[in-house]
Amino acid sequence: MTDQTSPKDGALRRLIWPLRMTRLGMVAERAVRAFWPVWTFAFIILAALAFGAGRFVPAEAFWPVIAIGVIALITMIFLGARRFSMPTHAEALERLDQTMPGRPITTLLDTPAIGRHDAASRSVWATHVARMAARAEGARAPKPDLRMSDRDPYALRYVGATAIAMALMFGTFSRVAEMGEVPLVAGPATAAVGPAWEGWVEPPLYTGLPTLYLNEILAESFEAPLGSEVTIRAYGEPGTISLRTDIGPVPDPDPNAYAQTVMMEQAGTLAIDGPGGRVWDVAVRPDQAPTVMLEGEVEGEPPGAMQFSFSATDDYGVRSGTATIRLNAEAADRRYGLIVEPEPREPVVLDLPMPFRGDRSDFTEVLLEDLSEHPFANLPVSLTLTVTDDAGQIATVSYEVARLPGRRFFDPLANGLVEMRRDLLWSRENAPRVAQLLRAMTVLPERGLPEDVYIQIRAAIRRLEAAIDLVSIDTQEQVAEILWNAALELEEGDLGSALERLQRAQERLAEAMRQGASEEEIAELMQEMREAMNEYMQELAQNAEPRDDTDQPDDGQEQMQMSMSDIEEMLQRIQELMEEGRMAEAMQMLQALQELLENMEFTEGGEGGEGPQSPVNKRWKGCKIRFAASRA
Image (cartoon, rainbow, N blue to C red; front, side):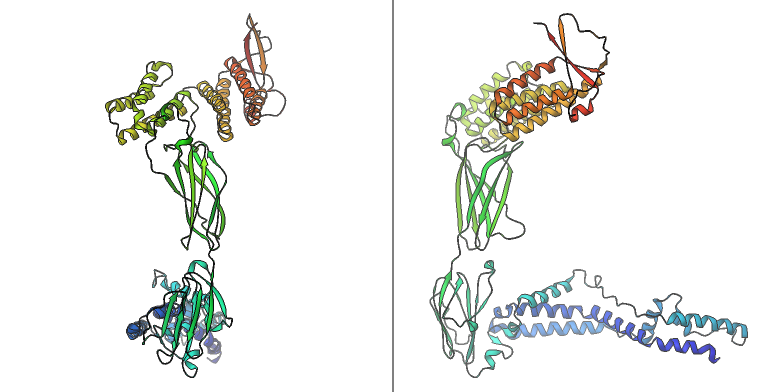
């Protein structure tokens, strides 16, 4: 019998320390879950006092505030004590047993129910106990589960932990003893014999400058930013120590007050009269006004956005900024619909983007805004940039912009509609002229106006002529919207075939070159033409007829063969000429390409030409393009 129980007794003795650690972990779990409101509340209160919140408590509210805080703390402790229960030895044993496979502790504490007097049964039981004892020797106390998401769903405990961490890094725990105008405990000043004082100079928060402790300033002068708050706290008999200064208005003396505060509004003298008094010459640390300037030019971002870069600086950081756009009617080309005086319009005010992160003392940002539908689009404007710092100082700079970037229309009919829309938005006096021009455009609708565009224009005419004597602002805006939608449909309408899309792309590119479009607009139209060319080649290749070398040209015609790489080289050359500003030569080459495409014939067979293979050429490699031309 001794041999059977000795492994059991030895294993149970070795479980003493794991069992104690398990029970200690359970105590920690239950204490944290029961008392987390106590230390959370205490951390928040300590952090607030470390940052000087106690000074804002009025003297008459001192004891009520203390009483409320103590009652709240006691209540939380009482509720926590009710929730807390000390873990028992059996509970700790159960927790430890659950961490091991087979529940060996339960086996060691158990006794066989039957077979006690049977030698074979006792032998089997002894073997089983020995195995469980060996397994129990590896017992390790489980880690306590300190999660409290079910008890604190709003994570208030993290608020308290963050608050005390911030107080440790940036607060001053000597202020914890301050409450209103009464020191709670004896500090350096109260420990001194007789009356004493302490003083602080707190710069405005936006400066990011540290608080100055006047007791440590041994020099006869110092400087501080405007708006700094100077606080002098006296200890001892009221009235023994007083503040005298001309840097700002000093509040009327209160015989029961222990502190005086003055806001710094100018340079001057700061003096503390009384035992241990001091005098300083206070200089103003200048707060430089912010600056702002435009970087580069106001440019267009196709298809119709406006963008520009600006830079701003300030010694403490820029708070906000705006870009104001006003019509510069004097710089406009006052012809046709712009002869009359423009109607007054509110300027466009845009918020300047500020850095989301990092320093705002010196930065460069980009403003991107789509004003293509605004009445100021494509007209001369004045641009005013304004930035403001936290001190309220403002910097303003203005620029004259020859043309506010907006959407450019290269379809002639669409361009005409947009011009009439511009005239109508310029002044409602142009309504009769706009209606007349729209009627002229719709005289022969079969000459280029799609049916739906024709219907929209006729609707605009009816609205204008129905109120021709007094066009309201609502009618003006409605007609402007109709003309804009019609122009967009003409410019971007869904054409029925790849050839029509290619022809439209060529016409828009040619019109853009004649109008002197920007490089970005030219590049966008060039890409559109390449894509239309690709679609057209695909359509021709699908309908191509196989031919062999025995095919002969028709009588009276000559045939010329070109590879896809040759067409790609022509497109590349056209783009190079446009980039070099040689628009006349680019127009001639574009016209030649148009003439070639009118007589294009795609056939199977042959090689795709030598030289580099463009994306189009790679797709249609192995095809020939024949161009038929009449004999001279």
